Amino acid sequence: MLFGKYLNKYYLKNIVYFLIGVVALVMVDYVQLYLPEFLGDLVDLFDGNSISGHENEIFELIKNTLIVAGLLFIGRSTWRLTIFRAENNIEESIRNDMFAKAERLSQRYYHENKVGTVLNWFSDDVSEVREFIGWGTIMIIDALFLTILAFYKMIALNWFLTIIAALPLLLIAVWGFFVEKFEAKVWKERQEANDRIYEFANEGFTGLRVIKAFVKENQQILAFSKIAKKSKDASIKFQRVVILFGSLIEIIIALILCLIIGFGSRIVYLAISGTPLNIGGQEISFTAGNLITFVGYFDTLIWPMIALGQIFSMRSRAKASYKRIAHFLDEIEEVKSPENAIVLSNVKGIIEFKDFTFRYDGKDHDSLKHITLKINDGENIGIVGKIGSGKSTLVNILLRLFNYSEDSVFVDGVDLMKCDIDSLRENIAIVPQDNFLFSDEIENNIAFSSDEKNLDLVKKSAVFSCVAQDIDDFKDQYKTVSGERGVTLSGGQKQRISIARAFYKNAPILILDDSVSAVDTKTEKAILSNIREYRNGKTTILISSRISTVSTLDRIIVLKKGEVEAFDTHENLLKISPTYQKMVYLQELEKEIEG
Image 1: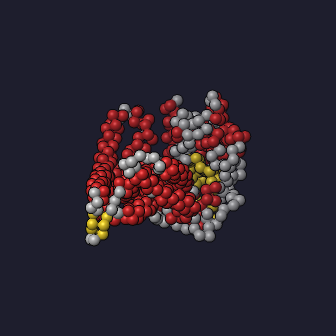
Image 2 (image 1 turned 180 degrees about the horizontal axis):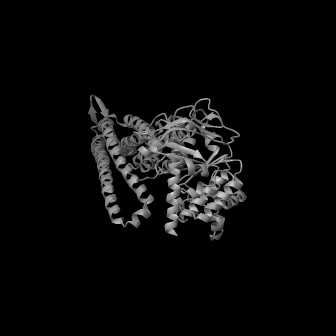
Image 3 (image 1 turned 30 degrees about the horizontal axis):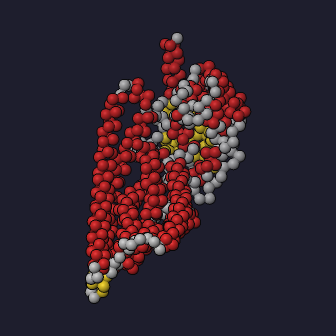
């Protein structure tokens, strides 16, 4: 078996399935050993004379064989249903744990680890662990109990032939122990090569339109072929080890069988000729039926011996895969709720920064410096600044996507580093720059924040974001499937559906991160008007690079190189903020040129 802190609890949870399955498996191992006995007895009935007078014995053997066949059918059906059920339950539980872990890990982790690698852990590595939990358990039980039972009967039948059969099997077991370690190393190399395939494929599919636009298909195919070749070479190297070990086991088994038949036939011949074999003063007598029974016992051992080789191979793979999974689950969760966290409720939307400074991991400069400002509840706030001035970082801080110093960021007077993260994020709706839509119906995308879909609210949200008319023009309207990442929709439609999704949440704080950049001026004005109408009394923060987007809001934050240059109304910023003045001048000039 394969043990570890992330597996043991699920063994206990599925212990009933395992116990029933193991009992059924042992019962099958025990019962099937009657078949060689029946066959040997049948051979001994044919003593060279007519079968006349043995009809009752033959019918009894047939009846007993049918009973054994029935028990084998029941036993094998039982262990398949129970052990494989437990295997699937554990696989599901591990994947759920991994998915929950993936959700809790910080953004830093995904900056350092590619998504393709993580996907390989979820697919190939979990499958390897699952396979060993199921088939590995079956093989181990068979190799243990069937071997013990068969050897017991073989020793009782002929101890001399049993010794001949046993010695090579011991060598197989010892050799397999060393082969397992080598296979684990080769399997790890193979999985790491597969990681690179997943990484490249993920990037390729995500950037497919860019690849086509720049006519880089051939270069991508060439690059992929090089990565695929490395994966192929690693897989071939691993399979060579597996096949070599498996082939040697089968050769050894065949040689043992030849020895058994050769020595056994000689013993039978000597017994028939009246000069039985004598070893150490002990007479060894053997009938033809005894030889058939002994060969039948050994034939029963062939599967456990082959399984023994497969167990070493499977365990080496599963062990290497489990280490990768455990390493992922052991990853420290940097961003998490503190003990005795404050749960936010009845949030008004008052946001305050007090001398807040922030720097990303691995960077040599601060992204935000000495930010001090206060947003009152119900205000509509704009944020402007050059690219890289820290606009998105400022709003991401509110979602607690990163750790930072205590007593520096507050919502309704509560320090965000001391509050429950789930309750915080439940009270904030955000439309990020990357307008990600799921491959699902539009109504499900809009109602994503709720477990129960309200179609009336979905339509109201679509009206709020000025996308209702576009949706009504679709053939399937709100049942239209958006495609992966919203590929079937235009940029403006994706933005407006994302805004509708955020509005549907009806959170006290709404953040729009450059979320109207792909819509025309008329639609932008309509959305801003809807914000004032539908979100009256609730806090809204809107990041934009267009002055026209924020000019009508209550106040505007102007960021310059991570610092607040000014925080005031549009009219006052025209007087006091050089950055804002320059942005207004350049955008007015741009309009004149376009006109």
